[in-house]
Structures are given as C-alpha cells and as structure tokens.
Image (cartoon, rainbow, N blue to C red; front, side, top):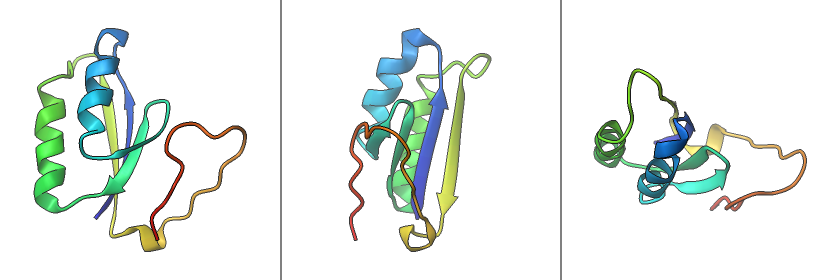
Length: 87
C-alpha cells in the first residue's frame, strides 16, 4: 500500500516524529512523508508514532492508497526533501 503521512505536532516532538517516520517513509517536505509499506510495516510505524505523540494536542493524518499507480503529484514552488518517486 502507498502511504502519505502529514503531521502537525508540538514543536517539542517534531524531531522525534520526523526521525521515526523516516525509518519507514521518504521525506517529501515539511511535515509530509510518503512511501510504499506492507500492512505489517504500516502498523509498526503507527505503533512507533503512537508512543511519541500526545493525542490531546498532536495530529497525524495517513492517506492510504492501494498503490502509487493511482496517485499523481504536482509540485508548485520550490522542491523540498526527497521529491523522487520510484517507478
């Protein structure tokens, strides 16, 4: 499955969330990561992030797509992070 993660967390946890998420996904730009994961790996990512965030003040949004084939990305402005998609 293809996952896009968008997060909005307290500044004290941003570094930890990014470091953990980059173990599983590719950093695209501020607070956005994406990549292909198995169901088990996706669940492991969720468990790892759940240990870091404060559910009362942080937000993680996962877009779960069947695969990258049906996703199209258009960039406007400067490129940040890992913009490459593997075809």
